[in-house]
Length: 334
Ligand code: ADP
Ligand code: MG
Image 1 (cartoon, rainbow, N blue to C red):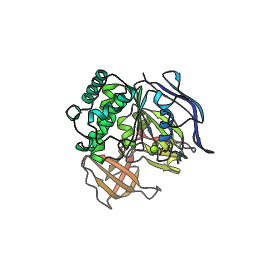
Image 2: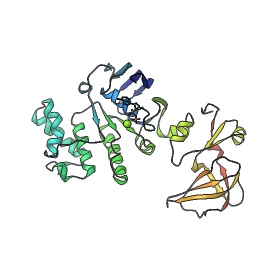
Image 3: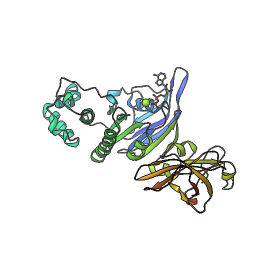
Image 4: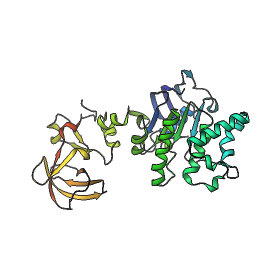
């Protein structure tokens, strides 16, 4: 089991409140990602769940039991940190066994759990090696193995991939997602990277200044961002925002249109402009169009390769079915 409930939880450091009253339910077996800019309170929130920080007010329940004052080791949760400290002189087997030895588990049970974890993590052939004889990704898996053998109610990850290079990060992202598919254990995962959030989460919690801006599935957030912050944070390249008269014509203070929902033509369209910088990725082409009547250049995304050159005159049109409308407070108009 691993259902975690936060009820009116707050956290202050001195007289600075970094988490205003916050309610959140994480369902058993869910993969939940906390995402938001640096300093928004993601780690603090995870550490409150882990018990590494005390809440200032409010209640945390784990599987219905009040865990607010329960010490971290007794919460049945396993935290995987960004910097994974393995014992260099111990084999992988001994490293994974370490928390079970501390807990005094019998040897046969230790071996059973190590073998299961090694199988899930593809470490079976590496159990006798020392950490120094492993790649970065394998070392990260050993650290996860040490968490798995504790059979926690939930795994808590705080930016576990940010030390890895880009290619390894993508690989580990897939491995952690696959681990979740196999174990079906609740995972709470913190990242500042919205692509990680979009690709891994069942449920994303978008945070800003300690406040929840929106909770939803990746596609909920992509299709129906509740406000300008979420609209601008989720999606890459960023959503285009158009304020002023153009928006008023649609009954909004600001309209938003994602780069993939703009089309381009040489003959006619809603906005005429000139092409600025373009990025040719092979799979997609991103380019900017400077439109004299708009305050910011539009970013357009076209699938595949198209021949646009700096300075070309083009017409750009929005797909009206995918227009997002926001009021003067920045809230979505349904
Ligand atoms: P994130 O993980 O989203 O980058 P943090 O949870 O680490 O953000 O920090 C949230 C806010 O709380 C920041 O303004 C940070 O400076 C502050 N903060 C975090 N830990 C402490 C602490 N121990 N003492 C004082 N302020 C802290
Ligand atoms: Mg952090």
